[in-house]
Amino acid sequence: MEKGKMNVHVNRIMVVLLPAIVLLMIMLGWGLGLFTHIEEEPDINEASDRIVIGVSQLGSESGWRTANTESVQRAFTKQNGYFMIFSNARQKQENQIKAIRNFISQRVDYIVLAPVVESGWETVLQEAKEAGIPVIVMDRSVSVEDESLYVTLVGTDSVEEGKKAGRWLEEHLKERRMADEDINIVVLKGTEGASAQIGRTVGFSMIAGEHDNWHILEQEYADFTIYKGKEVMAYFLEKYDDIDVVVSQNDDMTFGAIEAIRESGRTVGVGGDITIISFDAVYEALEMVAEGTINVDIECNPDQGEYISEVIRMLENGQEVEKRYYVEEDVYTMENVTQEVLDARIY
Image (cartoon, rainbow, N blue to C red; front, side, top):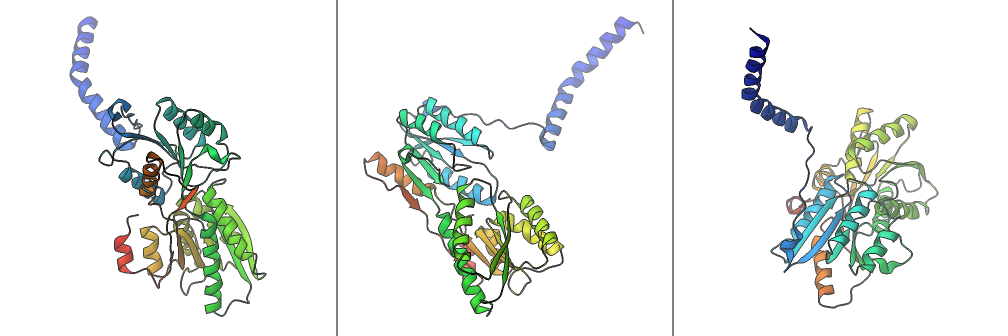
C-alpha cells in the first residue's frame, strides 16, 4: 500500500475509534479515581430573597465531621430561607482563609467558620468585620485578642469533655477497688493546634493532676484519623508493656488503636487488659460501647446546624446573642447505651 493511502486508512480508523477510546478513558478515570471532582460554585444571584451563608468546613477527616456537615446542610436549605455556599478546606487553614475572602468578595450575609486550628485568624476576621459580615464560629474555637472579630461560638466545651473523661476514670477505679494503685496512661491526641485537642488534653490533665498515682506515660498527636491512631498506638505498645488506660480524643483514632492493641495480643474494654476512653460517641463507637469493647465514650455532639440557624434568626431580629452556645452532650457506658439510643443516633 502506498504511504499516503496507508495514512488515510489509519486516520479513518482513528476517527471511528476515537470516541470509544475517549469514553473508555473517562470510565477508567472515574473507576480509578484519576479525575478530580470540581464542585461548581452556586450562582449567588439566585439568592436575592434568601439569607446567604458562607460555610468554611475544616475538612472531612472523620465520621463525626461528616455528620457535622450534614447538620449544617439540613439547617441551611432553600425551604428554610437560606442560600448556602459551602467550602471544604481539606484540613488546611490557608484554604479556609481563601474561602472566607471569597465569601467577603461575594458579600454573603453571614460566615460560618469551623476552624482547623485555633490561631492565625486575626487578619481575615478583621477583613470580614470591616466588610460588615458577622462571623459565627462552629464546633472548635478561635484564639484572638479581639473577640469582637466574631459574633458567637456554637460548639462543644472540649475542656469539660476532658474533665468528664477524668471523672469517669476516677469512679471506674473506685468501683474496681484500684483507686490507690498506680495507673499507667497513654493519650492519643487529635490534630495539633485544634481547640478540641487542646481542650480535651487540658480537661483530662486537670483531673489527672489530682491523682499522684496516675502516670501519663506519653501523649502523641494522631490527627483524629484511624490510620494515625493505629500507628501511634502501635508505637506506644512497642515502647510500654504496662499500659492500663488509653485516652483517645476521638472515635476514629480509637478504632485504629483497638486494632493495634488486638494485633499485639492484648485485650480491650470491659474485663480486658486495657481500658479504653474515647470521645465523640458516633454510632459505630456506641455499638462498641454496648458490647464492652470501649469502656466509655464522651459525647461530642455534631448536630450544630439548627443551633446556628437559631442564632441567625436572633441576629436578624436585632436580638442580643451570647458569646458562646454549647450543645448538649452525654457520657456513654454499657449501662446507658440502649437500643433506643442507637436507633435515635443520626451520626
